[in-house]
Length: 547
Image 1: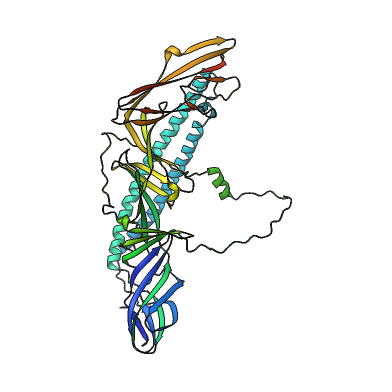
Image 2: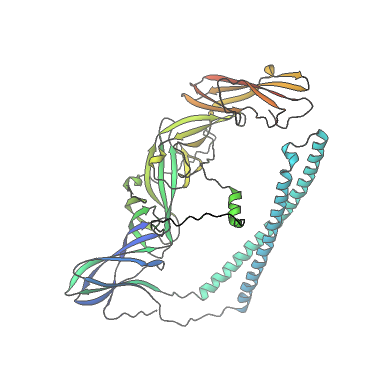
């Protein structure tokens, strides 16, 4: 057994963690212990301290007639014990070595296959992005030749990709079998030669002086890393006649090596490592530019990528065909009712009044934070040119009053999971729209009115008149607000003239050609919307786009 030595004036306290303030990437731990001392100077020792402590952050408070002289953090190493090993049979030792070498070789082979696949996929994308795929081919024979060439090249690439996939599958299967065998041998080795516990002790030592026997209590606070939290949201709508509920949850994790058992949590958005010193302006010099400034490669790549965050949801059906996996409500007792939000001038803190146990396992543990009811308007969005079904959309307002962080959100409608979206308050407007999935209760049909399609020759030009009819029907039991969008083409050539004729009072965006109608349909009510336009172009040329 490891042996630790203490001087006669040292006393180990039985301390427990009572409160933890969890920041986004760290935590402040409050640990307390009772003591009983005789007169004199004593080192009071707090054990079980995290090895990831910031020793400069330690703060101490005490009750009782004591004088705190010194506070320090120390690490005690156990006495060195010579290990004893059980010799494994030579065959097992050799097998372990061979398997490790073989797994390394397989990893290189798999990387080689992946690199070849990447090159082929790049070649495939280059072919698909070729100009003849974008309508630049002028004649039918040229188009046929181009498509024939494309077909042959794609078939060759796809055949080679399939061959590589088969090889990759076999290599991964062999790797899995070897890894399983290696794990078995290593487990046998660990059983015969278990790793000795090092029992390194991390301690906070508080030196106190008392003039007479006294009883009291010490509290220490300190910062640790390997802990934090991030937000997660549930957006729940129980019906189009009810507001949306935003369930604010926290994924709390810690791998600090400490036990957080039945502790009171406080979640904070502050960054304790950030400098809050007031900035100052220096001299702003102005001169001519003599040398060209070259952006670093990583910055150029970042600018080229042009990543944008937003709110994108994945639709799902809302009818009987939808799998009715009713999600069990883990917040059945409304634990968020036990949370109080406190907003300071620099951050937001949430006091969680329920006690939680967060093991030191690095895993996410759900903590209920807040529930918000949000003012919501519902409407059905239809894009009949692309989709024959309606999308139920929740239009949510009053985002400004919520202190939200960027995170993913699960969407539930009438207790059923329908998709996921992402919330980024830094780019959200006052109103946010969430798709709640497809609704088969609204029927839409878009047809070209052949009776009103006309072709007219005007000199070297041909003028075509096109009309579409959008037929709508509400099969639901309640009144529905509809937003319908369609479009007319936009000319990119001065020789092509597009003119709108009858748009049925649509809102017309002349920059992108989008037509927008808003309508209300009672239950079982039908309606038809028509729009028409004409295109005039050179009769000897073929238009690149369908219209």
